[in-house]
Length: 428
Ligand code: 0X9
Ligand code: ZN
Image (cartoon, rainbow, N blue to C red; front, top):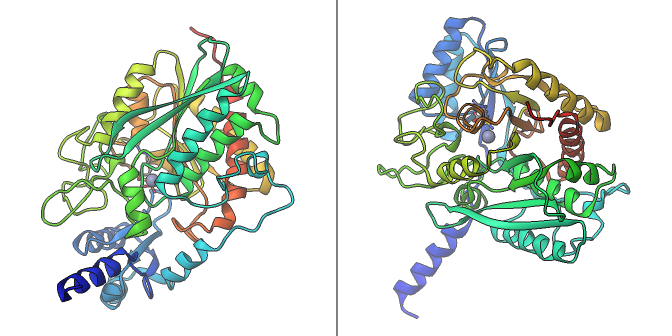
């Protein structure tokens, strides 16, 4: 082997290792006034820092991720501003290592985990190819079932040519029912989101411990898109655990558009997004500039005739949010959305006492235009449109340990079922 080949292989190996986060920190910052808050936000923009949890109208505190090279500078600057600051996560790599620990199996495993799908472990995070195989296996499995059917379609391809897939699950009687669409993985690093959507599929197809599945199938046709942003998802596994956007090349050696700033209802980068191609919340060159958001747009517009609900799963923060994200004004039917969300969150809390906040995303979280939820309601006319922010409230943030997949999914399934069964599907 030539020296060049050896050097090449060495670097190929090195670059195949995901980046490490030893000593990388997440700070919790608490400004005492609007002025201090504005100064901290300016600092965030100037240094292009990654905000894990933004401040909201009622709660100025925030969590901000800072690389070791910047930490001294950031701490000094925040103290000069006068805001309180403390180290929230001291060593991100420790959390990433913990995340990988296999989940402890409880005695009360739900149906999903009892080996019905022998090849797939619902209590672990998986690579995209394993997820695709699971979806194909579900289709094969339902071919042998008499009352449930499923079909898989590719609704588009990502910029790196990965499939964006939707699995339809329904009764096999050929009747069409009102539908519910659920997606996950719009943001790459929110690994609990695809895991939750896959768990839902499993419960619906193979049956669940609460016996919700038969009622849910009698009432609705179901669409699931577990990984809407496959390129970003893979990148967060192979290279950079905290990647958020897709992976489209933008020039200036910067990659990715924030798909949740790219949907075309009241699209506006100056509301919670950015025109800076390197920003984590880059809104894209135009509304629907991205293949992934366009794929969802086309699919929903072709299938929204009797679509009652659109739910997009994200993390973290434990929130069940409804539109709008682009304005603090509320939709005229917000009370219907509020009531249904509260049925979901109260059922969800019954298992482990997990508390979710319900409200409009601008009022509970922050304003951000171009979200898929706003478009599903405003653009596609789906009445019950929500963003659900899964566990936790910040202790692990995006790096939720595999041990929490099971409780997170069980409670989320219960919340989803109670929500869906409460909906009035009569027309008019
Ligand atoms: O900022 C987002 O896109 C979502 N939060 S996350 O931490 N998962 O990134 C919230 C989106 C809420 N909906 C709208 N702003 N439309
Ligand atoms: Zn998200």
